Image (cartoon, rainbow, N blue to C red):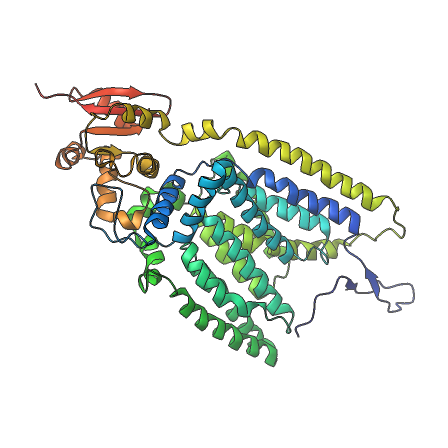
Length: 512
């Protein structure tokens, strides 16, 4: 039967000499230690969540956001390339792009970093709330949240998918409350959230995934014990799902918004070309924490007795993260409360420590001072990190090459560019017709055919020179040290016009 959460847990009695029955009520989380540990983890997480803009897609988002504001409309077709100008554009994250443009124009890149870091941090706070820190062993809560923050480190940053992380965390908190407290009605707000979600980011199908898993878990519970509360919640979740399905369509893209996310998932070209859609490479040191989280999660599921909903959400999120590294934050949102629940059960079976009978009066003051000290250290670290923005930008996108092109307007009219740099070059030069790009990181807009042509050139597949000729490419902006760089350097038909630590520009040599 569903009950309200308690701040204490009743333990079974320990058999005494006379096997008398007693109930021992213990507080699991002494206020000051819990506040210091969990609070310190949350504050320290800002050091990983607030970081310089490093996502090359950012520049496409801000330029598109500016275009939307200026024209007071969504772009109906491609604006930035010369290769797919007739392709229809379903802009699934236009509200986030508008927000990014407004933030950059008002506060610069530092403001973007702080705002999106704060948004991601709010999602982490919701994840922590779902861990029930007031009724679970606080060392388990602190360790699980810290592990989740470290696991998501390769993905955190000022990027649109942080919107989906926040909204997944909110939905999962509401679902867990609905399943533990019959009086909770927060999940009824989900259709309104879904209407906003479909205008902010294309990750909204995840909302239906977790809603469906909750309904399945409650259905299994009803089959097990036939309690009417479970069936009532299934009906409520079905109603929320139906209303949410309609709410997604409250979008200027119309019915096309329903299809867009699945076009990405079904695109073999995008799945094979875009690094974030690839499975995690466990040889990378940056993914060690994710690997550890996956192993600890599996061990917890095996040793504990997870509720059906926890089991289903943990396995679904783990499958998503193993399929694509970009879904690691979804694993953090879904699995961190499961880690806490399963390992807390193990903790209790091993014997929970008793709470000291007395607490020093200076405990709260010491705890507050500790949190302030942690905040000061993290604030200093964030300041230093944000000051690195120019160097981070120069390493992520071709800043020097773009400056050279701006100073040499006579350099060709048809560019072949590195896929990830298309957005930056579009932001830098739009609407100059001589600087329209060959490809940019909006895969559905580009289409599989054009993406495959790009791939054939970038990876030197048979016929790559023919593609450059057919598309009348007369200059190339690409990664320094890449295979294409080496091949063009040895080709007398191309001349290296510019080179720095990040990029190289090749221009077709005059015909002799």
